[in-house]
Image (tube, rainbow, N blue to C red; front, side, top):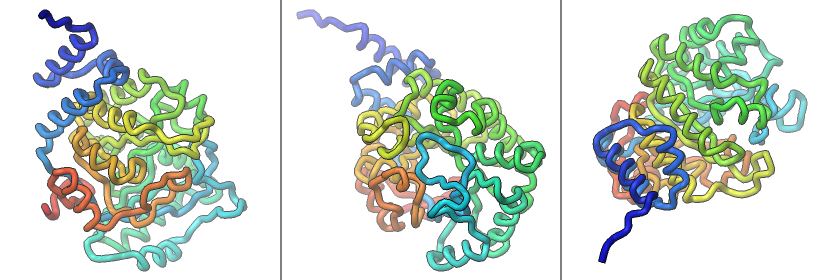
Length: 366
């Protein structure tokens, strides 16, 4: 009895051959994988790549999320965190007010402050610089991960100085690295449709990351998927990052985040588990020059995160303490996890938990 090999199967076999030999996948390959129903094969390919890169180690960091202000000039369609100045719930904290929150939650072993917030034009750029300086002075041994590339573009407009000068002033004050947010989908069509016209453009986001890398900073990159973007735009987003990584080598990790159900553009449902897993796996296959893919449990939930660790992810993020942005948009996951809970989660996926610092230096292998 002869076996008929379909065109789909043949194409998947060709991609598997590329993966086996370490050949770079194309945009067309990435779109084919998204359109394929063969999730197990996609997951197996991504798992194979991840095992080659990272073995069975899965990394996490003991970190704390901080939000100095939720006042924002932007009106991104997916955001439920932002407020206008004077609106109920709006806030802009002083360093002393932030210290009060930190000291309440501080514990030995804390490695990182993860800081994001609104684009608040009611305070000067100096406010943001002095916040970093005050944190670094009071907590000199904690890594400060703060201000997305979109925030850097806003600071440049606010202060009238270049991206490089904005970054240099923040670094002189104590900034160690940037989170990957503000990228959303790196497509001008998408950014216009999602009311991001006043936010950093695709070219600006990439240029700010390039500038940070050239200043010696290692950074993070994200993608916010699951709303109005096309599959081609998702893959092109990854290719933009891959090309910049070829140039600078400055990205440590890629974090694909699904939009949450309260987010805009009429979306009132969760992104499917299949789409989440497929995106993590395809990210691992497309981004051959970025060491880590993160399974962000805040957006995935803990059980899907465990599965994602077998679909190409090598990072489970961190303890966080109290996440606000995704939960403002309807995330149903915990606001944070303890170190023991993260270790349990990773071991439950058949992986080896590794506590790290921000820069993936190993602190403890469990």
